[in-house]
Image 1: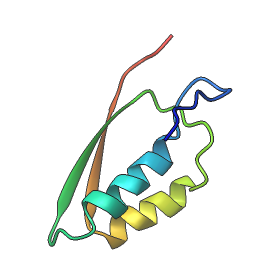
Image 2: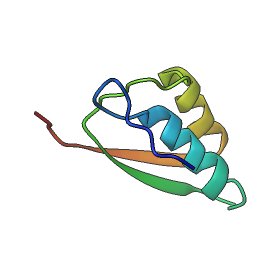
Image 3: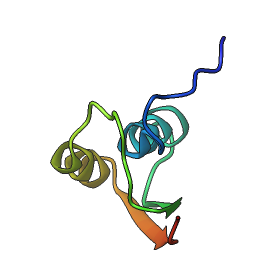
Length: 71
């Protein structure tokens, strides 16, 4: 694999959360919790906010966002 630096500063946060749900939480039964440290900026995710919220609800994952301010 190669590391790529994006053209925009930031991350593909919604896509990363979705991937964690699909890979790490898929086989776990019951309620799960995910803590996300974020500046709230998302650049380039293909999944929309509403699609991610639906995925969280369908997989019984509670997501807690801890906001931090960036420059």
